[in-house]
Image (cartoon, rainbow, N blue to C red; front, side):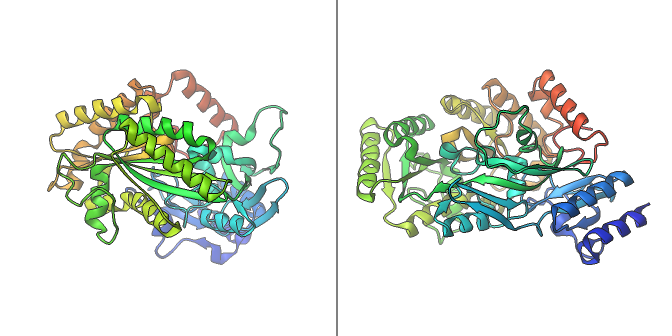
Length: 478
């Protein structure tokens, strides 16, 4: 049966695009190197028709499929299990731009289109595609949709779901749903698009999407502010909303220790107000990165931006601040923020949490949960940063200084996860804000979602994928 299936797959996509031998780690190992599976084959179709044929062949053979884009996920959701019985279906060859509609402010692209390429294509035509995240040079739009990726501009533009108008999807039966509408209003029954966005490939395979475009802002301003506490960061956010309105496009918060790791491991970068040591209590405890995009003149926009910071100084919620004078300086500030994750890798294995809390309750959550962790694990170091503007915090836990990071992970990961997730629930939050559930959190999900929600999700999975062909063991437990 296996040989017959492989022959069928080769007949569909060509011999060169069915990989079974050699080093397949690029597809079999997740980005964080937390998990390594073994695939029956890696299949690389070039069209929606080929995807549909591959799905039909695998379903007939009783072989499950793991859809994969750029393989940049953080929850082990797009790599095969260890059985050697799953087919990885890579969409990377499907990267064409099918259409740009300037009047409708839409672009239709295939699922394998790299996010950065989509941004650049839009910019070349004078438009903005606002989705922006650290992995944009390698992640694909299909993966972004499948995980409902967030990023740094959600405060204004929303998650990937809000940027999507229509989809083309291959179902678990190998049929093609053509829903590539550019309509902003279509009230004709259930919104099938929203079933597949955020489903992590467990209901079908996204092969193309129609996405929103925006006029390119006339001016973009960036500031870096030191704030005395998380409460003051939330106060600054409120001031920014009132002063800048829809012009507020980014609002990132970063803890002192998180920034000290960037200063320590990437000394060539200048980290405002924080040193590599960051042990002194009189150093800046938190920093905020703000971005303002507007269609008015730079002079007027800068005046309003400066007025915001003046009011913040007067209110006591900012102790120091710098405004980027040009695009190069702005990019340098954003590069510091984006380097926190890489600096963590250099510091050693850590326990990552991608959580969301109502913005008003984040200061109390951090205070309470930090204290609980310090009591359980003396010396534990907190790497707090994230998208405060939309309530998404990357609340990561690093081993005590000088400790064995791998041993720390093995001994404490389950305990730490339970403590953090229980605290998240008590603050009416979510255990996954933008990374998804994958296989890392699927066993936790029933403890933090209501029984009714879990029942509805299982019903949807059973209806759309009765053979459990699509990415089994992800999101929902078998």
